[in-house]
Length: 399
Image (cartoon, rainbow, N blue to C red; front, side, top):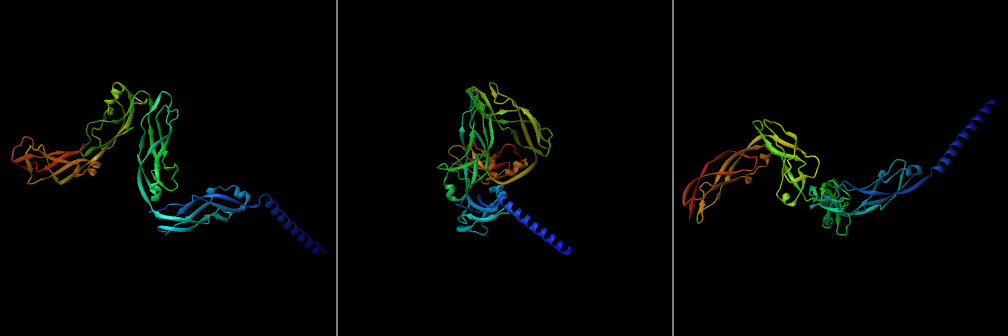
């Protein structure tokens, strides 16, 4: 009897447990039912060769997912990936399946469209100038905006050839509303067709942002001029002055227009580089010309004088030019070339070419016949002549 009661108790407990589980599932499904939801997801392109591009494709697809309501309610389009796999695909028309990567505990019901017709073309690149478009070009009362300075002034656009042909304007948008100081921002580059439609879905911009400086100054006439820093002293033997970089490189001066017209640049106090073997960095004061003021409170700039190792370079067979040839005479050179050696800062020597050097003889006041004339050389700034051969050449002046 006791054994029978024990079995009955166990049976009742098992039935109670099953009923409790069924009740929990029922309540859970009522409060958090399985449902469906549609998401608008960006369509990605994967695996396409860098030299290729797609001229037309849908930007988004509709993805329908199934899952418990509380899970779907927490999802956004960023949690779902829709893409076409283009590995190994070449130029031409292709019908591609849309793949979808879904979050855990969800099921893909459908994607619309399930396939897309894609036109694959060779990637085309072109260079365009960047313009400034003002959403508001009026600064604060009593101030005026000067010509904007963009860095860089041009960008590369890459995309399908037919889309590049539609480009009407490449620009950055500037809002000067109530500005009473210089506008200086990094702004995204926008690309529009002739109808004002943005083309950024089809075209890549390099760089995608440009540095925009719009000087905003008092309505006194103003002028933006470069800043130059002189040096005093000489570096250690075996070293040369390379570039001199000033930050900021441009400053705005204010004054009467006749005074501004006579100023093309402004200078700073000199930087001493005597015995230097490495770059010299100094804060130096700007020397403000008489009759003008700076459009800034701080008169100091940072000057960086690049100190580089001296490098030698030789040029063989540079052609000799004739200058000031007397009228009615024609010069002939039995040996018309010269070899020279120069020295200068390493970076300057790396860029220096024979075309940058002018080798010539001055024939002024010479008469007909044979003459020995000294060879002269004009060199770019920062380059020093160390040797030339021959020192003189023979010139025959014939009628």
